[in-house]
Length: 501
Ligand SMILES: Cc1cc2nc3c(=O)[nH]c(=O)nc-3n(C[C@H](O)[C@H](O)[C@H](O)COP(=O)(O)O)c2cc1C
Ligand SMILES: [Mn+2]
Image (cartoon, rainbow, N blue to C red):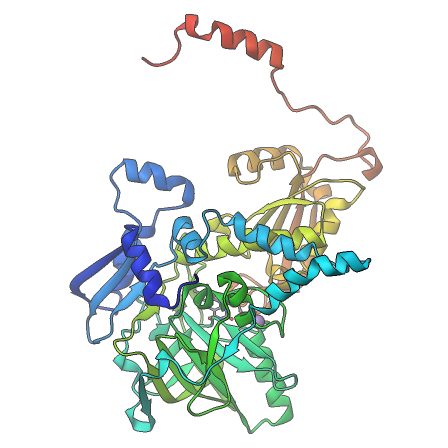
């Protein structure tokens, strides 16, 4: 059974020792961030065990029961470890989700009748994940309209000292494509300007921004309806960050992840639908002619993203559950909670990449690469120029287009061992020959790019070079001891008395 809502996930976290309640009053202005920092940094996957052994504070989810200035409790770091991400998706290992996706991808275009019949149960299963419209739901337990709406009822964080204000950091932003009517859901931060308006940080290449541009092209003076859900069952809450193609409904994907359809309820004041189990819903609109300065904001690059001009969301109605829980997260110097979300995306979508490019053996995105700055790719190289072909493929693959540096290595490099990657990459490199530059769209948050949203990328071909690529010298073998010698030393080992006693 899927988690029915955020509370059920919270109870599970608490039962498993993965959540701690904070009864002290703590200020959502900066203080909560600082508490979270002391739990989750440094705390990269590999370090976790040694930190625990050293008696470091445990990286757990936190429920602040008394955030200063609000009656609403605040949940943070709920997804801030590989274990909690796996719990959120109800698997033991994230690879299990990847295997399920692979199962569906394999059922491509069956030829014979029997193949078609064999596929039916899978297709029916897929159909059973479609979101389901229901009349009403828990998110409607309390309704505030008009002057009754006050965003400051909620313990919205000011995360870092130079932030331009308080930011809603874990929203699901709902819009419909003005041309196709198809739904999009994205996680885009929202700077609170006053009781009833916020920024809408739709980065240029994201689907929400595309909806805005298409609607504006039709009617520059008009507005589009927008709804925001905060806090839902974990798969639904996470679906807003998934890099899936435009017009593919994130709510369908959430249904697939939780193996149960997401129940959707109509908004009170516009035609959009939101998850029935949401803790808090904001309904309103964005004027197509209005932009306002947004930021600065301490971002996941570990630097402040600069001020920019973004659309404004006007809130007309707030609905919430009785005693709602405010779900949020902090981004900042890596690794933070969003690293684990990104890591789950990397693992879950690997089969999709492999399906399109079967030569890809594995990919790794180190936390310090902030998702878009560095991707290490291992390939089974089978023709000259293959590494460069994969770079170009990645630069044209959905949000992987943002990847600033791609390092392509041979299939026998353990790309999750960054020491090995550095060693073998540098050894395989003739820099002038093996580095390739390209121009294209870059992440809006890249502050080093020559222009916002546009800049250069670098690919490093760190594979073994072939004669067919013009490399005429012999390529040396990697040094490895032979098995017979290893066995003989195994037999000798004890008598050498070299192990610590
Ligand atoms: C915590 C967090 C905050 C994010 N904030 C933003 C943001 O402010 N603006 C943005 O465009 N993307 C942001 N993203 C990334 C988007 O959620 C992600 O690119 C998503 O795929 C966008 O959905 P879309 O493809 O439907 O546009 C954020 C991601 C996370 C995990
Ligand atoms: Mn989308």
